[in-house]
Length: 70
Image 1 (tube, one colour):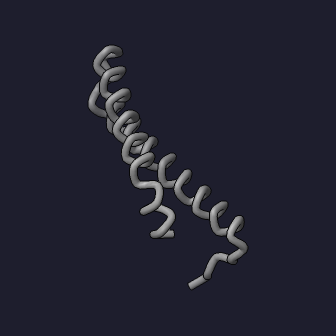
Image 2: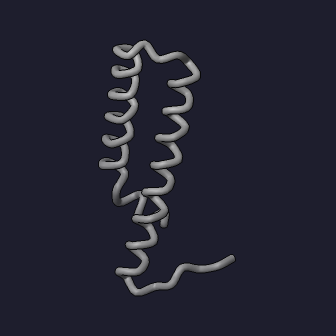
């Protein structure tokens, strides 16, 4: 999984920075409270981790290796 993340570092960094920038711009435009901003950032982090897990699983399946269970 680490090699997958290393090979996709630039797109991941660009995606995260655009998400955070856009989120704060719209948070200021919509006058969201600090609690709303925190909830949005937590939700974005959960979605990011979920997408990382799903794409890592798909990469493993396409390589023909089965995931290890510890």
